[in-house]
Amino acid sequence: MAVLIDNYIPNSLNNTLAIVASGLLILYVFNSMFNYARDFLLTILGQRLSIEIILGYIKHIFELPMEFFATRKTGEIVSRFNDASKIIDALASTVISMFLDVGIVVIMGSVLAIQNRTLFLITLGCLPLYLLIVVAFTKSFEKLNNKQMESNAVLSSSIIEDIQGIETIKALNSEHERYQKIDGQFVDFLRKSLDYTKIDILQQALKTFVHLALNVIILWIGAQLVMKNEISLGQLMAYNALLAYFTDPLQNIINLQPKLQSAQVANNRLNEVFLVKGEFNAKKHKLLADQLAGVITFKDVSYCYGYGQNVLEGINLTIKEHEKLTIVGMSGSGKSTLVKLLVNFFEPTTGSITFNEHQIKNIDKHLLRSYINYVPQTPYVFSGTIMENLTLGNRSDVTEKDIFKACQLAMITEDIEKMPLQYDTVLDENGGILSGGQKQRITIARAILSPAKVLIFDESTSGLDAITEKKLIDNLMSLEDRTIIFIAHRLAIAKRTDNVLVLDKGRIVEQGDHQTLMNKNGYYASLVNS
Image (tube, rainbow, N blue to C red; front, side, top):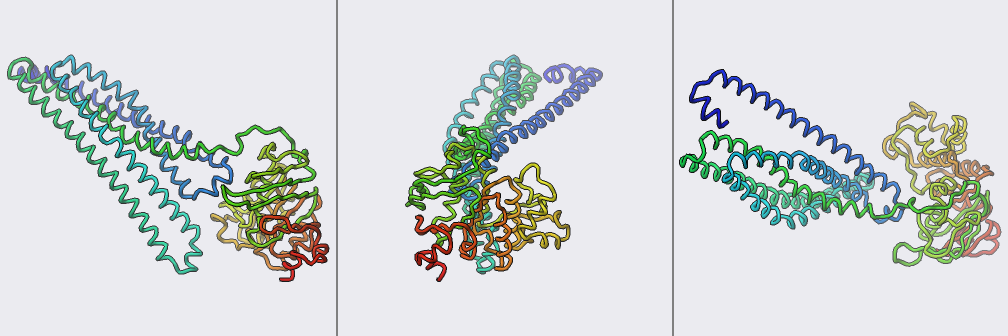
């Protein structure tokens, strides 16, 4: 540019000007290609980081123990995905800046120093100002980032909770009340976002001022040098033009600060989850499913949630292979907690549980849960076809004949055949088109198809009428090669099983078959007669 202004224009060198213009156009083409490559690499790097961070987070969540989910809201877990995106953005931008922006700053800095040392030293004088601005806002960004992310987590939790409970909200005619709660949380989130944005805008304004002030100072000092004939006008204009190629990547590097601080706060929140140990990490003895077959024994087992009182106290119990057992008791007596210990959702606070004399703590959890299947009180079906739901987690050698037989045993065959696409009927989230009883029977059929030799049904027939329930229980009782444990409030089931376990306030108060317990005229008899 200096030669252009000082020589070519004054001397009317048209042909040379055409060559220079062509050269500049070619240079700008390469510049555009460079910017395209930079943005493309940024996108590719962001996707690679997404695979590592977001999929790593999801995988870790699947491996966490049930205690984690019992103490966390869904929204708190989901909000970490937004946090992860901040980390990905910061890491991708940092890597690109380290490889490209730093290189450009060094190269252009050398060019500017060659052009004029005096002006370059003035240019370097802006760096302490940038550094001062960065340091001045560090604590504010950290504090406001944390508040914003926490507020977003609370808001996400409430929205998810209300969508999941929309039926109850409408039944209670409480739409306005729930909306007001979310409205308040949303306003709080917006307020905290605005606080962060105000600080960010203020910092950007100060950076812009330093940048513009630098341009003015360079032109001012440079003009004085031109008037003193220390440099030519062309050299000044060339320096000023090249200055943008130095300050723009420098700004990119400096602007990493708020991104890196957001990423740091987000990383701390993600680490709250990542630092929770997965339940499959510990090395266990290598056993086969057949080695677990046999007697299941509870010995002096007690359990409490956190630091509360014991939910179960001094449980001593033996469950024989292929036995049919019913566990009964009042609500809150510890029935569900007892069977969840069997699938190792929770670990006993004291005492031990053994499968064929193998300690449950030494058994690989994948193996354990392929041997014993728990069907929860609230049935859950996933979005997808009925067939996909039935075959979820089943044994590898299952056939269509096995599926049809399992559905017959679960008394769900007729219901499926009445649907438009039968087994290929697509269900939405949690099977909205199904009744509670139909969902229960699909989950029972799914359990029958599993490789499990021990089946636990936690109030899994509560949504059925008495006649359907009786036929279904008859079908389950016919599975002679399975150990079956029922948790039931309807004591009609207890009459049909080999053994009845009676719980009260976390303790076993009675045990025996139905008739024996009735003859004792104790706690069980009072439950039957009430």
